[in-house]
Length: 272
Image (cartoon, rainbow, N blue to C red; front, top):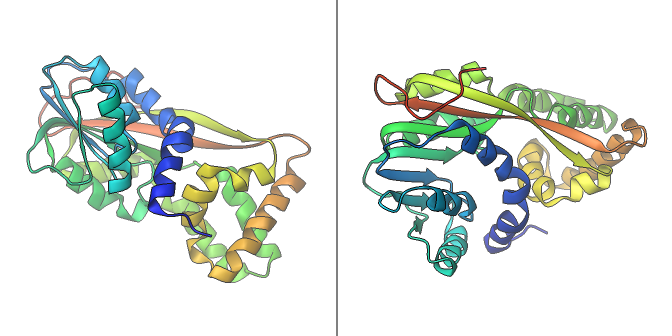
């Protein structure tokens, strides 16, 4: 049974942001040094955790505004800001003005929507843009198992869709090309390898991150009546291949920084 947007918003706050989003924002915190920004916009701010953390870090005179993915997340983020008396604005609507720095969480943006997302994000920036997302090589352990499932379940005609999942995740160079086309210059990037570990296949397919946020996207090529059977088979296949060890998959969490100008400030790491 599918969950409501309200239920997903609470799960995003309680489980996904600590488990998933924090892997990317920790890289941001290590890679970006704030300088002379007077205004900051955070696109896809989720439940507001990172925005509120940045509010504590930034000078009081710096304006920071978070755009959430939906109204349910906005309500959660606003309640948090009110509880800690933080001077932060949250809304699910894009503000009309431009900002010195735009930070964007693209970790759940579908790869085919990334060029448009980056163009729209860059359009909101006055000077700098920093964004983060998984790049090519992420989820390889999962996709190899899913490929095996499709072959064993007489879904060989769907195996091409699994290949599309693999190749659809952009390389660092491909993301840089998209960002340049969107108007960013002198791009820098930094990639960290993040490992997600699960006791077994059942824990993997039933985890909030996977069941409610990743599988619905990955299983998009399946008919509704096929999804549950493939989910069960994926769990069994993981257990058959993990040799009594935990199951792990890796994500190449990459942060990109660029400027709508001649010189990039703030981003400390050179391209890897």
